[in-house]
Image (cartoon, rainbow, N blue to C red):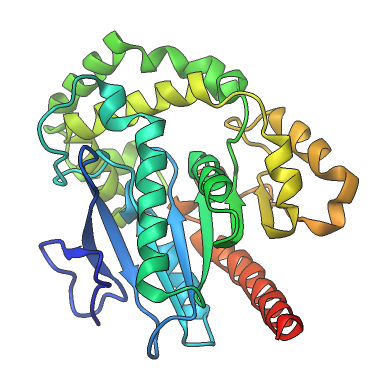
Length: 331
Protein backbone atom coordinates (compact mmCIF):
# COMPACT_ATOMS: atom_id res chain seq x y z
CA UNK A 1 0.00 0.00 0.00
CA UNK A 2 1.62 3.26 -1.12
CA UNK A 3 0.78 6.93 -1.41
CA UNK A 4 0.20 8.66 -4.76
CA UNK A 5 3.14 10.75 -6.01
CA UNK A 6 1.66 14.09 -4.90
CA UNK A 7 1.60 13.10 -1.20
CA UNK A 8 4.42 12.74 1.30
CA UNK A 9 4.14 10.33 4.25
CA UNK A 10 2.95 11.75 7.54
CA UNK A 11 4.50 10.32 10.68
CA UNK A 12 3.68 8.47 12.82
CA UNK A 13 2.55 5.93 10.25
CA UNK A 14 -0.74 4.09 10.58
CA UNK A 15 -0.90 0.74 12.28
CA UNK A 16 -0.73 -2.32 10.05
CA UNK A 17 -4.50 -2.86 10.37
CA UNK A 18 -5.37 0.52 8.83
CA UNK A 19 -7.10 0.62 5.46
CA UNK A 20 -5.65 4.02 4.63
CA UNK A 21 -2.41 5.98 4.76
CA UNK A 22 -1.79 9.39 6.28
CA UNK A 23 0.01 11.89 4.09
CA UNK A 24 0.87 15.53 3.62
CA UNK A 25 -0.02 17.56 0.55
CA UNK A 26 2.59 20.31 0.13
CA UNK A 27 0.72 23.10 -1.61
CA UNK A 28 2.45 25.73 -3.67
CA UNK A 29 3.68 28.86 -1.92
CA UNK A 30 2.15 30.76 -0.18
CA UNK A 31 -0.36 28.03 0.74
CA UNK A 32 0.66 25.85 3.65
CA UNK A 33 0.68 22.06 3.83
CA UNK A 34 -2.47 20.08 4.52
CA UNK A 35 -3.23 16.69 6.01
CA UNK A 36 -4.49 14.03 3.59
CA UNK A 37 -5.62 10.42 3.88
CA UNK A 38 -5.45 7.90 1.05
CA UNK A 39 -7.42 4.71 0.50
CA UNK A 40 -5.82 3.05 -2.55
CA UNK A 41 -7.72 0.96 -5.06
CA UNK A 42 -7.88 -2.67 -3.97
CA UNK A 43 -6.53 -3.82 -7.32
CA UNK A 44 -4.17 -1.89 -9.59
CA UNK A 45 -4.67 1.73 -10.62
CA UNK A 46 -7.97 3.40 -9.71
CA UNK A 47 -10.63 4.00 -12.32
CA UNK A 48 -12.59 6.24 -9.95
CA UNK A 49 -11.21 8.55 -7.24
CA UNK A 50 -13.34 10.19 -4.57
CA UNK A 51 -12.02 13.54 -3.35
CA UNK A 52 -13.56 14.18 0.08
CA UNK A 53 -13.71 17.76 1.43
CA UNK A 54 -14.74 17.98 5.11
CA UNK A 55 -16.79 20.47 7.06
CA UNK A 56 -15.39 22.87 9.63
CA UNK A 57 -13.29 22.01 11.58
CA UNK A 58 -11.65 19.99 8.85
CA UNK A 59 -10.11 17.23 10.94
CA UNK A 60 -10.01 14.14 8.76
CA UNK A 61 -9.95 11.64 11.62
CA UNK A 62 -13.59 12.48 12.33
CA UNK A 63 -14.45 10.98 8.93
CA UNK A 64 -12.24 7.89 8.70
CA UNK A 65 -15.02 5.41 9.71
CA UNK A 66 -17.33 6.94 7.07
CA UNK A 67 -14.77 6.86 4.28
CA UNK A 68 -13.49 3.41 5.24
CA UNK A 69 -17.08 2.15 5.01
CA UNK A 70 -17.42 3.55 1.48
CA UNK A 71 -14.16 1.92 0.47
CA UNK A 72 -15.16 -1.41 2.04
CA UNK A 73 -18.43 -1.47 0.09
CA UNK A 74 -16.68 -1.02 -3.25
CA UNK A 75 -17.02 -4.14 -5.40
CA UNK A 76 -15.11 -2.86 -8.42
CA UNK A 77 -11.71 -2.95 -6.65
CA UNK A 78 -10.95 0.17 -8.72
CA UNK A 79 -12.06 2.87 -6.26
CA UNK A 80 -9.57 5.08 -4.41
CA UNK A 81 -10.40 7.81 -1.90
CA UNK A 82 -8.43 10.96 -1.07
CA UNK A 83 -9.56 12.93 1.96
CA UNK A 84 -8.13 16.45 2.10
CA UNK A 85 -8.11 18.62 5.21
CA UNK A 86 -8.51 22.37 5.27
CA UNK A 87 -5.20 24.19 5.42
CA UNK A 88 -4.27 25.05 9.01
CA UNK A 89 -6.88 22.86 10.70
CA UNK A 90 -4.83 19.78 11.58
CA UNK A 91 -2.79 19.90 14.81
CA UNK A 92 0.82 19.13 14.08
CA UNK A 93 0.65 20.05 10.40
CA UNK A 94 2.32 23.42 10.51
CA UNK A 95 1.45 26.06 7.94
CA UNK A 96 4.84 27.78 8.06
CA UNK A 97 5.63 31.41 8.96
CA UNK A 98 2.57 33.57 9.69
CA UNK A 99 1.13 35.41 6.71
CA UNK A 100 0.23 39.07 6.81
CA UNK A 101 -3.38 38.32 7.72
CA UNK A 102 -5.53 35.34 8.81
CA UNK A 103 -7.35 35.58 5.48
CA UNK A 104 -4.09 34.96 3.62
CA UNK A 105 -3.60 31.73 5.61
CA UNK A 106 -6.98 30.23 6.43
CA UNK A 107 -9.80 32.05 4.60
CA UNK A 108 -12.14 30.46 2.09
CA UNK A 109 -10.15 31.74 -0.89
CA UNK A 110 -7.12 29.81 0.39
CA UNK A 111 -9.21 26.67 0.92
CA UNK A 112 -10.58 26.95 -2.62
CA UNK A 113 -7.03 27.17 -3.98
CA UNK A 114 -6.00 24.16 -1.88
CA UNK A 115 -8.98 22.11 -3.04
CA UNK A 116 -8.34 22.98 -6.69
CA UNK A 117 -4.65 22.12 -6.45
CA UNK A 118 -5.51 18.76 -4.88
CA UNK A 119 -8.12 18.03 -7.55
CA UNK A 120 -5.64 18.90 -10.30
CA UNK A 121 -3.03 16.63 -8.72
CA UNK A 122 -5.44 13.69 -8.84
CA UNK A 123 -6.23 14.35 -12.50
CA UNK A 124 -2.56 14.68 -13.39
CA UNK A 125 -1.50 11.54 -11.49
CA UNK A 126 -4.18 9.19 -12.82
CA UNK A 127 -4.97 10.61 -16.23
CA UNK A 128 -8.06 11.86 -18.06
CA UNK A 129 -9.79 8.45 -18.14
CA UNK A 130 -10.08 8.32 -14.35
CA UNK A 131 -13.40 9.58 -13.01
CA UNK A 132 -13.09 12.06 -10.12
CA UNK A 133 -16.11 12.34 -7.83
CA UNK A 134 -16.15 15.06 -5.16
CA UNK A 135 -17.92 14.47 -1.85
CA UNK A 136 -18.35 17.53 0.38
CA UNK A 137 -19.81 17.84 3.87
CA UNK A 138 -21.27 21.11 5.17
CA UNK A 139 -18.98 23.95 4.03
CA UNK A 140 -17.06 21.26 2.17
CA UNK A 141 -20.13 21.10 -0.10
CA UNK A 142 -19.70 24.78 -0.93
CA UNK A 143 -16.00 24.22 -1.64
CA UNK A 144 -16.91 21.24 -3.83
CA UNK A 145 -19.15 23.48 -5.91
CA UNK A 146 -16.29 25.98 -6.34
CA UNK A 147 -14.13 23.18 -7.75
CA UNK A 148 -17.00 22.18 -10.07
CA UNK A 149 -17.30 25.81 -11.17
CA UNK A 150 -13.60 26.00 -12.05
CA UNK A 151 -13.22 22.48 -13.48
CA UNK A 152 -16.66 21.72 -14.97
CA UNK A 153 -15.46 19.23 -17.58
CA UNK A 154 -13.10 17.32 -15.30
CA UNK A 155 -15.51 16.77 -12.38
CA UNK A 156 -17.57 13.62 -12.95
CA UNK A 157 -20.05 14.01 -10.06
CA UNK A 158 -20.54 15.93 -6.81
CA UNK A 159 -22.21 14.53 -3.68
CA UNK A 160 -23.32 17.29 -1.28
CA UNK A 161 -23.92 16.17 2.32
CA UNK A 162 -25.81 18.58 4.61
CA UNK A 163 -24.83 21.41 2.24
CA UNK A 164 -24.24 24.90 3.67
CA UNK A 165 -24.15 26.63 0.29
CA UNK A 166 -26.11 29.84 0.85
CA UNK A 167 -26.60 32.50 3.54
CA UNK A 168 -24.99 30.45 6.29
CA UNK A 169 -24.95 33.53 8.53
CA UNK A 170 -28.77 33.60 8.43
CA UNK A 171 -29.24 30.01 9.53
CA UNK A 172 -30.31 29.35 13.14
CA UNK A 173 -26.77 28.40 14.17
CA UNK A 174 -25.28 31.27 12.19
CA UNK A 175 -27.46 33.79 14.02
CA UNK A 176 -26.88 32.07 17.35
CA UNK A 177 -23.10 31.74 17.47
CA UNK A 178 -21.55 33.91 14.75
CA UNK A 179 -20.38 36.33 17.46
CA UNK A 180 -17.93 33.64 18.59
CA UNK A 181 -16.03 34.09 15.33
CA UNK A 182 -15.10 37.75 15.91
CA UNK A 183 -11.37 38.60 16.20
CA UNK A 184 -11.48 39.08 19.98
CA UNK A 185 -13.45 35.90 20.64
CA UNK A 186 -11.18 33.89 18.35
CA UNK A 187 -8.26 34.96 20.52
CA UNK A 188 -10.08 34.21 23.78
CA UNK A 189 -11.32 30.80 22.67
CA UNK A 190 -7.95 29.72 21.33
CA UNK A 191 -6.25 30.69 24.58
CA UNK A 192 -8.86 28.75 26.55
CA UNK A 193 -7.42 25.75 24.76
CA UNK A 194 -4.68 25.65 27.37
CA UNK A 195 -7.29 25.20 30.11
CA UNK A 196 -8.75 22.14 28.41
CA UNK A 197 -5.45 20.32 28.77
CA UNK A 198 -6.20 19.58 32.42
CA UNK A 199 -9.36 17.67 31.50
CA UNK A 200 -8.92 13.97 30.66
CA UNK A 201 -10.71 12.25 27.81
CA UNK A 202 -13.08 10.70 30.34
CA UNK A 203 -14.37 14.20 31.19
CA UNK A 204 -15.02 14.93 27.51
CA UNK A 205 -16.85 11.61 27.30
CA UNK A 206 -19.24 12.85 29.98
CA UNK A 207 -19.79 16.15 28.16
CA UNK A 208 -20.20 14.47 24.77
CA UNK A 209 -22.20 11.51 25.96
CA UNK A 210 -22.64 8.91 23.25
CA UNK A 211 -19.54 9.81 21.24
CA UNK A 212 -17.20 6.90 20.50
CA UNK A 213 -13.86 7.15 22.27
CA UNK A 214 -12.04 7.47 18.94
CA UNK A 215 -14.05 10.61 18.15
CA UNK A 216 -13.48 12.00 21.64
CA UNK A 217 -9.73 11.68 21.09
CA UNK A 218 -9.99 13.56 17.77
CA UNK A 219 -11.84 16.37 19.54
CA UNK A 220 -9.22 16.38 22.27
CA UNK A 221 -6.42 16.93 19.77
CA UNK A 222 -8.27 19.96 18.41
CA UNK A 223 -8.96 21.41 21.85
CA UNK A 224 -5.26 21.17 22.66
CA UNK A 225 -4.19 23.13 19.57
CA UNK A 226 -4.68 26.94 19.70
CA UNK A 227 -3.45 27.45 16.09
CA UNK A 228 -5.96 24.92 14.74
CA UNK A 229 -8.77 26.50 16.74
CA UNK A 230 -7.91 29.97 15.42
CA UNK A 231 -7.80 28.66 11.85
CA UNK A 232 -11.20 26.96 12.18
CA UNK A 233 -12.79 30.02 13.81
CA UNK A 234 -11.40 32.40 11.18
CA UNK A 235 -12.68 30.18 8.41
CA UNK A 236 -16.10 30.12 10.12
CA UNK A 237 -16.06 33.93 10.22
CA UNK A 238 -15.26 34.01 6.51
CA UNK A 239 -18.11 31.58 5.84
CA UNK A 240 -20.57 33.98 7.48
CA UNK A 241 -19.32 36.83 5.32
CA UNK A 242 -18.75 35.04 2.01
CA UNK A 243 -21.39 32.34 1.59
CA UNK A 244 -24.45 34.37 0.68
CA UNK A 245 -26.60 34.16 -2.46
CA UNK A 246 -27.24 30.69 -3.81
CA UNK A 247 -25.45 30.10 -7.11
CA UNK A 248 -28.55 28.96 -8.98
CA UNK A 249 -26.94 29.13 -12.46
CA UNK A 250 -24.18 26.78 -11.29
CA UNK A 251 -26.66 24.27 -9.86
CA UNK A 252 -28.83 24.48 -12.95
CA UNK A 253 -25.94 24.04 -15.38
CA UNK A 254 -24.63 20.91 -13.66
CA UNK A 255 -27.75 19.40 -12.13
CA UNK A 256 -27.08 16.02 -13.80
CA UNK A 257 -23.84 15.74 -11.77
CA UNK A 258 -25.32 16.70 -8.39
CA UNK A 259 -26.63 14.60 -5.48
CA UNK A 260 -27.95 16.19 -2.27
CA UNK A 261 -28.43 14.78 1.23
CA UNK A 262 -30.46 16.89 3.66
CA UNK A 263 -31.20 16.38 7.34
CA UNK A 264 -34.80 16.62 8.47
CA UNK A 265 -33.69 19.30 10.94
CA UNK A 266 -30.42 21.12 10.31
CA UNK A 267 -29.66 24.39 12.08
CA UNK A 268 -26.65 24.97 9.81
CA UNK A 269 -28.89 24.91 6.74
CA UNK A 270 -32.22 26.17 8.07
CA UNK A 271 -34.67 27.71 5.64
CA UNK A 272 -31.97 27.81 2.98
CA UNK A 273 -32.90 24.17 2.33
CA UNK A 274 -36.21 25.32 0.84
CA UNK A 275 -34.42 27.81 -1.39
CA UNK A 276 -32.12 25.08 -2.70
CA UNK A 277 -35.02 22.74 -3.35
CA UNK A 278 -36.98 25.45 -5.16
CA UNK A 279 -34.00 26.16 -7.40
CA UNK A 280 -33.83 22.48 -8.38
CA UNK A 281 -37.56 21.87 -8.76
CA UNK A 282 -38.04 22.72 -12.48
CA UNK A 283 -36.19 19.53 -13.41
CA UNK A 284 -36.09 17.63 -10.14
CA UNK A 285 -35.75 14.28 -11.88
CA UNK A 286 -32.23 15.18 -13.03
CA UNK A 287 -30.97 15.69 -9.48
CA UNK A 288 -30.70 13.05 -6.77
CA UNK A 289 -32.17 14.43 -3.54
CA UNK A 290 -32.37 12.42 -0.33
CA UNK A 291 -34.15 13.64 2.80
CA UNK A 292 -32.37 11.92 5.63
CA UNK A 293 -33.59 9.97 8.60
CA UNK A 294 -34.67 12.27 11.47
CA UNK A 295 -32.07 10.77 13.79
CA UNK A 296 -29.10 11.59 11.53
CA UNK A 297 -27.68 15.02 12.47
CA UNK A 298 -25.54 17.52 10.59
CA UNK A 299 -22.44 16.12 12.34
CA UNK A 300 -23.19 12.66 10.92
CA UNK A 301 -19.58 11.54 11.06
CA UNK A 302 -19.64 11.09 14.84
CA UNK A 303 -22.04 8.15 14.98
CA UNK A 304 -23.79 7.71 11.63
CA UNK A 305 -21.03 7.32 9.08
CA UNK A 306 -22.13 3.82 8.08
CA UNK A 307 -25.59 4.99 6.96
CA UNK A 308 -24.20 7.87 4.92
CA UNK A 309 -21.59 5.54 3.42
CA UNK A 310 -24.40 3.33 2.14
CA UNK A 311 -26.07 6.32 0.53
CA UNK A 312 -22.85 7.54 -1.10
CA UNK A 313 -22.13 4.03 -2.33
CA UNK A 314 -25.56 3.91 -3.96
CA UNK A 315 -24.98 7.28 -5.62
CA UNK A 316 -21.57 6.12 -6.77
CA UNK A 317 -23.00 2.92 -8.24
CA UNK A 318 -25.64 4.92 -10.11
CA UNK A 319 -23.01 7.36 -11.36
CA UNK A 320 -20.72 4.57 -12.57
CA UNK A 321 -23.58 3.13 -14.61
CA UNK A 322 -24.14 6.56 -16.15
CA UNK A 323 -20.42 6.94 -16.88
CA UNK A 324 -20.42 3.57 -18.65
CA UNK A 325 -23.47 4.49 -20.73
CA UNK A 326 -21.89 7.82 -21.68
CA UNK A 327 -18.61 6.17 -22.66
CA UNK A 328 -20.48 3.61 -24.76
CA UNK A 329 -22.53 6.25 -26.56
CA UNK A 330 -19.42 8.32 -27.27
CA UNK A 331 -17.41 5.42 -28.66
